[in-house]
Image (tube, rainbow, N blue to C red):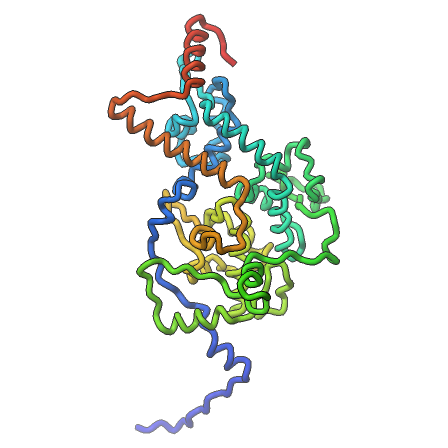
Length: 405
């Protein structure tokens, strides 16, 4: 039976909507491919345990300390082991274990190389403090309010290379770096965290100041002489091929207008390719500020509303495997900025002053793995001369029943 209903003519699209539909491919998903070159970088391979190891190095001292002094800090340290003592035993090149004077409880102290490295970390911060603090300033400038909740800023200190007690210790005097802590909650309400109701802001007024150039803009000026057209450097993984429609979209994506993370973005329509390029640009600039140009994926979620990112902005990372690499380690996902490791010297990304120190921490972790292998095979382990001397002194003190502090 023939239907008596009349066919409804298609509703004409306005020119702008037609343009967005023809250009838009924002739901693109590219194939992710494992790249062994990133897995072989020690500072990335040990990223999961690097922060708790450095934190424990600052808590322990070169003289023996009972493990009970740090055993209850597992949740804040976020060690991969369920017990802090087990974590310390995994890295004998950094922590030396001994038996306490009473009840045979385990005591730990820093090894001589770890103590020297801890002092080097402090010296680097003292010498390059202005450079390191400027990265926190740029992060604040990326926020439209030019400020961040203190708890969010606290979570970024490790990635930016600042001491994790930077806000708590008065001797650091954050005011000399141009920062101030603002109190926003004056209602007397109870706050679970001491940082609740506080924000980190800038002392000077940035309204009339010229915003800094992003890394991508600096790259464009170096290559093309101007920042009129700002492409994002792409670094395809070996053996990764794109479909033709994705390749065409990616070529058009590079030619889209670039909005700097430090500029106003209120006129950008959400869900368009221009907004997607801004998201990629914001993440690119963010990772370029970090020590290793990488971060754990879940650590970035707290920045979403403060940097003007969409609800599921982390999916944008998956859409750009030529820009970011997903490193899966010990049930965690780390995002790595490819340009920092594959561009060589042809990039405007400046090496972080703390990168060499972090690499040496990773070296101690690699050395610890070798020590454990030699112990299991029954081969002798060569100790640092200072560690050997300290161990003998500790045994003598323990044998006469004195406390060694």
